[in-house]
Length: 558
Image (cartoon, rainbow, N blue to C red; front, side):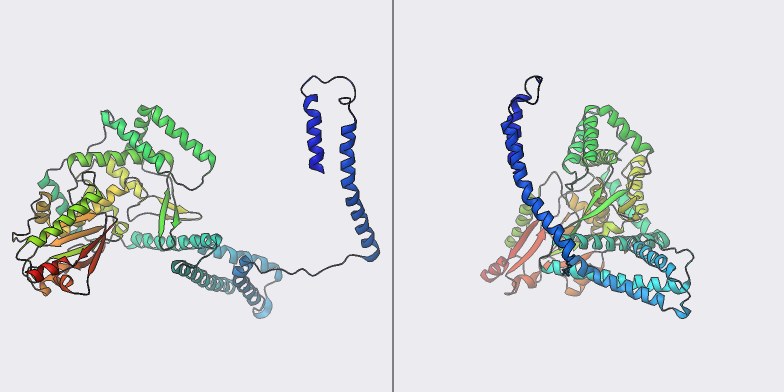
């Protein structure tokens, strides 16, 4: 009825408001307005009747109270153990000997227990003021029992998610927050252990790593990457590329519209005024050594977690330009050899096809037998970049980079990483969220390559004199290719026994302070001739490579 009244009123007053208002009451037509009031009273009369009837019954008979049935919600079900633990704490406080603690102090002790729990969650020290030892011990026991339940519940939910059991979004979101807090606790412990007991590498290891890298640079005659001049033609193109990349890689999480508008304004000013942005980048590289905090959150993939880093926008512009400049100069000076992937010169599908052709060449070799065997292996560096020592990284970068760039890059890695009320100072490891983090990881794993291959074999791989399988040589590897942290290799067919083959596995001289490697043989002569191994697979560069039992057929024909 109210809706009908409003519609009639709109129709009536539509023409009345178009022209200047004339003198007199209304617009001179009273019957439609009267109709509106009639409709209004028709609706109000039954409401008033009901209200009067209820009022009289309340006065004469009194109120009737009905017992409400409270449904147990999931939030209450999760909080029951917490309530029970608090009740147990209160009972223990009340049952202390002599009952010397008054009930007025009970609220204070419960408040202290909440503060203790908050400090445990944020991994901070709890410092109570003017608390007796007995009560402090009781609160610590309460926090310990609650923390065990909290960790167990987080692990159980994560296990059920891995099994594929369906859950509500709110529960998954809470579990993600718990897992992130547990990861931060472990990371803080690791960083504090490094600050107390580090650095973990010895002087001999430092000398060995820097010497092998320096020797490689001298042999290949690689020149240093100088400080950017900001005067060349390609500098503007590099800036545009870096700004485009920042625009595309902005986080998909819904942010505040004010922050988004500020970022858009900064992008526009950077594009319109490139000279001003160049001067800002130059000043920050030369002078800025203290940086703002980096936010961290995880994107849940249920079976894995992907970290998302939130960096200040002005700093992202500088980092993006440095990243583009380093990769451009490296490609010009050929710092990274051909076996390092991904690269602009050889896309991944072409590289996989090339590897397939190399394997097929083995079919044409007459000496291929059990004694002259083919061994294809895989090396995984895992997450060795998280153990990377920044002092070691700085000394390796001195061979190829300008000092101002090195100090900026290393100090950028040494920042506070924040999640809600938790924070940790990154003193060890490469931050992957930084735009030039990929360049640092490739440099770090390139040192691994040089230690595994040796200078002699790496030079022969670099000069492309290694794919001739018919020649017998002293070199161990005839093929070697690395994609970020995964490496695939072929060992040359030579006569050596299995015990000697095991010694090769132990001969990789990588210090434990730099990281650990996982070495595995995917394919050898036994795998080829067994009837059970019909398809042997290998995952590399985002592709699945299957080695079908074709060698066995050739052997039978011969």
